[in-house]
Image (tube, rainbow, N blue to C red):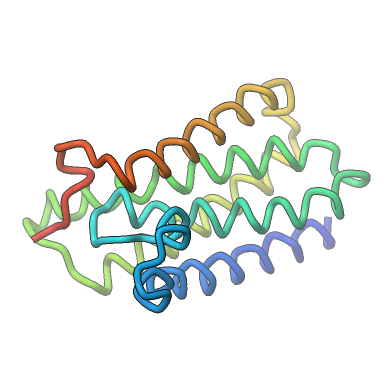
Length: 167
């Protein structure tokens, strides 16, 4: 379990740092369309969900082959963590802004970090229990659907609050 714990801590740190940096990748790339597929292109909550999704997916692609032999449920667990962490960003953001009536940068950053920590903690717990293993195929499909949505909605943005920049 020490190895799994170490990987989850490394993953949390990696996603926190890489996700934070990816907030700026689109601007740094001179608004490259390719970079915009994986990094936020505006300040909407939807675009900020990319901050967790793609770095954690990248970490998972790296970690799964290294952990699979000792932890056969690691893939389904990390995929579950990605989906949960990504979903928590708007849930936490809209909950706290609904209560306060406005958003604060410190709470926005805290929302991201808390979502990362919960995502990896959940992945750890699911790895040790193997509860999500039977849903591996569904989780893969769900990850693919979310990726397609990120690509499509970067170019064709629905006219709803999740895709609007907060005031």
